[in-house]
Every structure is written in C-alpha cells, then in structure tokens.
Length: 351
Image 1 (cartoon, one colour):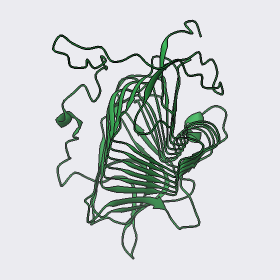
Image 2 (cartoon, rainbow, N blue to C red):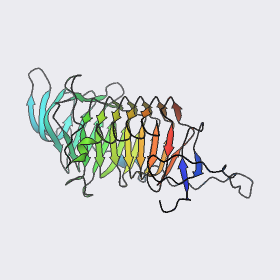
Image 3 (tube, rainbow, N blue to C red):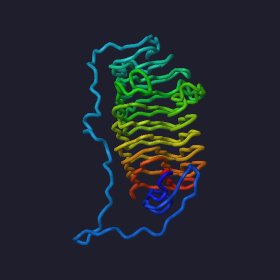
Image 4 (tube, rainbow, N blue to C red):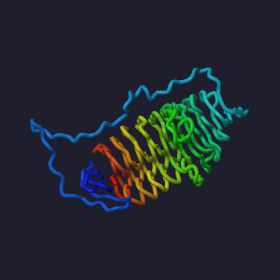
C-alpha cells in the first residue's frame, strides 16, 4: 500500500461500536496493529462534540423510483408454457407477464430468460419450482416479486433432495457492459436450496451468489425476504452484488444457513456506494474465507444499522463482517447486535 500511515476503519470486538485506528495492512491475512488511544473529539464553539464528516449513505434517488410498474392484468403469459392437468404450468424459454395463483405452481423445466424491455411480476402465494439444471437469466429487464406476509412467494427446488442454479441479473447484452441496466424489486419472498458451483472457467457468474448474482443493475430493493440453505462456490452464499453505482435498499430480511467458499457467507457487495443495510438478521451463515455473514470489497458510504449477527462463522477474520479494499467508509453503528460469531465479530481494513 502506498500510504501506510492513513487512518483506517478497523471494527473489532470492542463492545458496541467501531474505532478509528492507524494501521498498515498490506494483505488479507495481515495482523491488526492498534495505534495509541484516539484523541478526544473536537469541540465546537458552543462546547459540543463535533461529529466526523460521514459520506452520504442511502440511495441517491427517491424510494418511489424503485417501484416497478405492473403490466396490465390481461397481458399474455410469455414463454414455452405447458399446462399440467393436475394444476400449474411448466415453463422455459423467453418469459414475461404475470405469474399469479391462476398459473401456480410454476415448474421451471429449462432455462428461462427475462429479456431487455420485458417485465415479470410474481404475485403473492406463487410457488416457483426449479429443475436442477434450470437457470434464470434477467438481462436488462425488470423483475418484481411481490408477496405478502401471509402469502410469500417461494423460489425453491423441485424436491428437498435437489438444488437449483439460481438467478443472474445483468445488463441487456452481457454482465460486463453497462447498457440497459435491469431493476429488481422483491418483497415477502423465500429463496432456498439454490446452489451455484459451475466450474466453467469462462463464466464465473455461475459460481457466485447462490440465489442472486447481480451485476450492472440500476436499482435493487429487497425487503421482508428469507434466504436460507443456499450455497455458492465463490462469493456470496446467497447474494453477490457488484454494484457500480446502483441504488440499493436491503431491509428487514432474514439470511440463515447460507454458505460459500470465497467470502461473504450470506452476502457480498463489491463497489457498493450509498446504501443502507438495516433491520436484517444474519444467523448461522459461514464461509471458508472472510466475512461469515457479509463481505464488502472496495465499498464506500455504507451504513449498517439495527441488524442482528448471530453464530456466523468464517475460517479467516471477520466472523460476521469483513471489509477489504480501497476507499472504505463503512459505518457499523452501535445499534447492531453481535453474538457468538467466530472467530471475531468485525474486521475492516484498507489495503
């Protein structure tokens, strides 16, 4: 690192908050070195303590702009659709329209793609059951999953003994481009038993984010949703977000029993900016790398508040939260609760 003397944020097991220390981390496994005690806060002319200048956190657009308009009720159901005599539909191919109780359960029997300019709305009470080899591509499109507390939407495998391959959200042409970004709006859903472990060296996106691998996405809102028993070979046991300046709301979710081998047992965010992670519960998530619950890479202006982190595990530092990279400004305030995370609660470092 070029400037070894700069002030870094290292969040260790210090009770209820974080502490600014001076450090010279150079690698992912460097030891923590604490400086002398921090100076007393500066005081203003009226004698009150001055707070440090914290960058803006939270979305930069109004929350109303996250909402995806629903298609007309009579919009045709798109895709290769076969109705089962016993009820429900089998579907594959290019999809769109509304999945509601009239067509549920929805059996995904082959790859499905929501293409640029299309919208899919999944309504309350719908069960979406995936064949083990089926993949869901969202390419510069709008995905709205709109359950209720009484009737959540369920995305799962065909049977408890099987898994499914999750969802990839990208731009219209490829994950590496920025044109025609998609939007994701999820409320009151359950995602379980997704597994991304494709060893194809030419496409790492099917090894990351057990349920969701999200790249080049304009807006993401996920609320009141459960992610459980999901796995990824690399980053983000349930979700990986490579943000590149989207607007993100992540609130009142439960992430439990997710795992991976590459960091962020439940959630990994890279290049995150101006987002809030609040009122979520992370329990029993694990990774063979850093960040048993969450890992941040090269992220700034992040606020975590009123979250619970319990019994998350990492084989490297950061049993609950790990932060790594450049330009880190991650505020983990004292409203968060940490209990039983191994080997420690928090480790944030800048290289």
